[in-house]
Image (cartoon, rainbow, N blue to C red; front, top):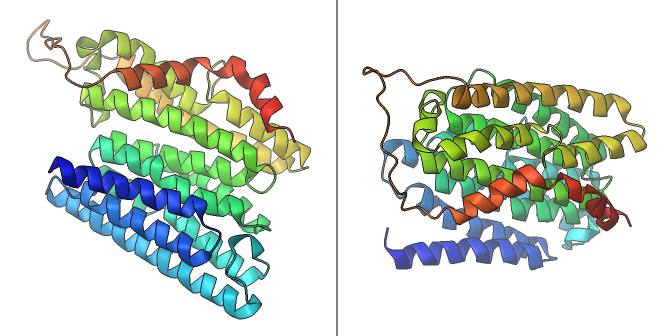
Length: 348
């Protein structure tokens, strides 16, 4: 791809998200979401592979459906209440419709079907953008909508944690596993969104760090399947030693960074007298933990089958920048001691 075109598309991604962040009017927010969608589709289809074109088409159809629902719901809200302001939502019908549209935008269950197939057709860099940056604008709108539809968000959150854990159990493709991992993490954020929005932002930040580390590591080792990561120890032994910690952090095990948002979310749900929901969410986290353990086992405790005894890959100097991977990996592993600081910042 021409570097000038690439720069324009990245600028379009930034402009669309910033426009949605800065808007208080539904039409302006919708415009930002559309700019965002139109900027990433050429990035998805840039390799001209049939699988990438198919993924871009599916993504476009899902996002266009969500945008049409959003526009229809905001028009309905203006018709019913005379308000176009995002923070002046009061009628339950447009609130429910907009919540469903934004859930489709970010891939919350049961509107998640497009996400694993789309992510499977993308390269890891574009997949990283889709699973991180593309979540920012819809989450900004969900945070601004007051009052939120509490029952619907709880149902979406619980369904996402369950399906995100269950769907990843029988997968062998890494990108599909990461898609279901993303769905499960978004479910945790949806559960706490109405009770403590600042905690949702903390969970979103830690999810971004952990997901970036995982995508960059798989990109460095050029791995696409579970079988492929079994041979990563011969290519990048130091990274292979750290990757199980990154994956277990994604699963939410202490004493790793991923434990912090889950711990605080369960604590807040218990304070809100939602103990059954907190228990169910904690149990569904075990499903996700299983396939993270499966990946860790494949990376560190198995050997890739070789035709020749003792054959191994050359350890060549990689041309890819490794500083972002180093920063995100260390952050994924070592930020749990900052929990008291996070609690102090989150408390009103």
